[in-house]
Picture 1 (cartoon, one colour):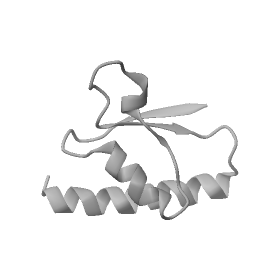
Picture 2 (cartoon, rainbow, N blue to C red):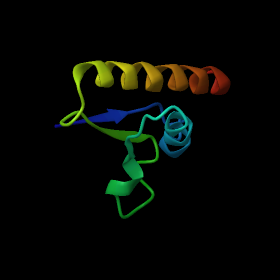
Picture 3 (cartoon, rainbow, N blue to C red):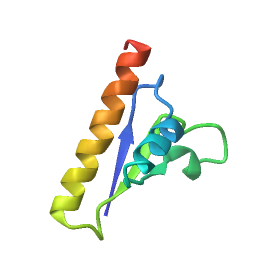
Amino acid sequence: MFLWLDLPEEIDAMELVKRTMKKNVVFVPGISFFVSSNGRSNVRMNFSNASEGKMEEGIRTIAAELKEMIQRVKL
């Protein structure tokens, strides 16, 4: 039902979701699952209620935004 992603620690999942929301793609930033400040660079993706095509489209959107963010921080 879910995928948990560990992003590079320089990537802020909240910033990533704000960027993807503008393109109608939403996921839950990992920080929502911790009582501490952990999870800042984590993502939980739900794939239980989307069609295969929508999932592919969403993953492509996330990947494109993530690539841009990674290039900006020069990982």
